[in-house]
Image (cartoon, rainbow, N blue to C red; front, top):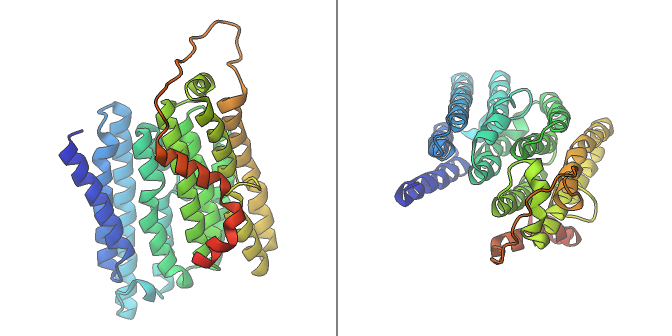
Length: 346
């Protein structure tokens, strides 16, 4: 892609995100969301592959419908209360419509069908943007309106997302689809706690974005898109593959790693709110996700391809690993001991 065009799209993405997260008025928030959608579309469809065009079309239709619902929700609220302020969303019907709109924007169950398809049609870098940066504005809107939202509805959406995100990822062989279902599952954890402790949702999102960025950038470095090629990629940069194993386990939320921190805090907060059954259920559902993370981790480092025919060994690359990946990997694996400091910052 033309460097000037790339610069314009990247700036527009940044601008759209900043407008949404810093606005008080619903129309400004809606404008930011629209700028974001229009800026990411050329990035999704730039490869001119039919699947990429299909992904861009699906993304556009879903996001346009969700933006229309955001506008409808805010107009209904303004009609009944005379308020356009984001934090003054008090009308029950507006809250319901807004929850549906944000769930559609984020890809929460039952509005999740577009997300795996769009991620599968995009390149790894665009997939990274879709999984992290594009989720920030909707999560910010949820954060600002969290006192008015319906707890039962959000808890239901969250538990369904954790269940379907884990269950539908079990049978996948395409890594981008596995990461899409992983994202849906993580969004369930964020949605369940947003009413009781919104700061925990943001902490969970930041840590999730960091770990997902590490996985996507590592896969982009070793040029891997599906499990069968992941099995033979260990010869390229063995040390990076070993760190990818740890990052995947961290994304699964295993204890000595960073990913355990948000899960631990969320379970603790849910127990304080007398929601022990919900905490137990979502913890058990995260075991489904753990299965496919373990499968990814197993393919990354432990196995050789399970056949006797000779396969072409990949050449080991001598180029040094990107410093960004090194920093992100270290943070994705080793932040748990400094969790008290992280909590004082958040």
